[in-house]
Length: 99
Image (cartoon, rainbow, N blue to C red; front, top):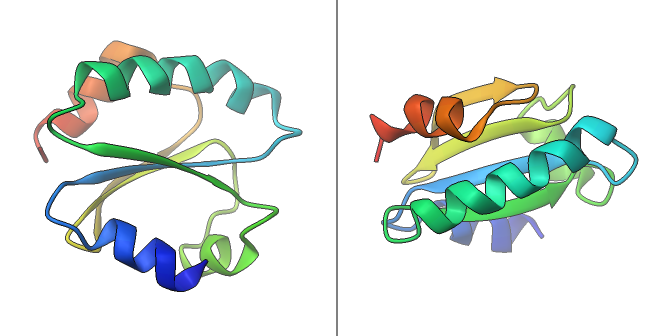
């Protein structure tokens, strides 16, 4: 996964990463919001989901200690990160300046 993840976040298009867990109820609430954001910004960013339990190396590398955690990568670097639930408007507002 590490090589694949690095390839995904190093592209020209910014990548919004949803670090989540299957057992996490707030993650389940956040999921449809992220789908809406992905649809609204489909030409401006890519969205990927990372299950922290299935991808412990990636989660550890980025010090993910709470889920959901959203991180926006631009050319392989984190330019924005936040944990907890966000509304569609909050999320778009937070990341739009980096797109």
